[in-house]
Length: 238
Image (cartoon, rainbow, N blue to C red; front, top):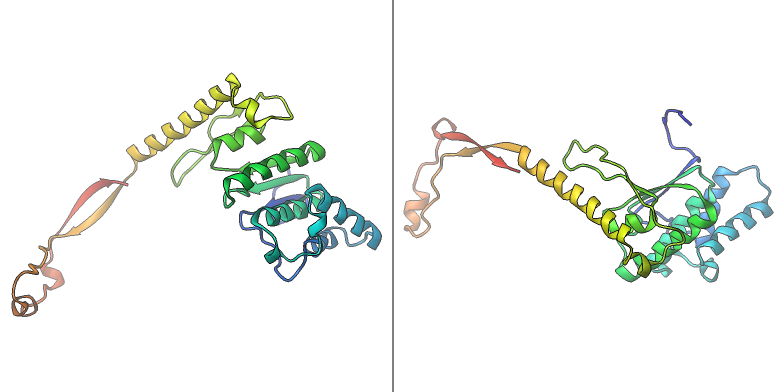
């Protein structure tokens, strides 16, 4: 909407990698707390119905009264997704939400996120280091260039029909071509950054001690003064 972002706001929801749940609150209470903050004027019954809707959306109704330590990693992340969606944000930021999970749980949650998006149709920005995950979930991929001064790379459009079938898209020519292009860009960016960045190191001109010499010879030697130490500057690839 062309407005400058100056502070956090309910129009932006975020799901972190580390769940960020309050450990003393149940699944229901973690989500209710967010709803209470964003919609304080709603009636109690409406708030409860709203919370229950999103708990059911992420298939956690049987676990609604459990504490975070009683949940698996995948279940905790689903609570985080439900909490963010319950705030009804205009845009949802997923900051590597699945990278800490095992492969099976990660694949299951990818399907869950895809299903929830089909129901919700919110604008989602997904940060991931997995090209396959990006292609499976996204409509557009924008890789970052390498280096401390990273910038946005070219945009790759994902033209795969929805809903997407994980097994079927692996045989799609467009999937293979898109994956190749994205990976090649990332590798090329990494090679360019490695070839151009150098650092200067100051190496002192000091010979190592001879540990095979008698102990008296090692500790009887006068330490070098700072003015006696020679140094040279060399360039090395980072």
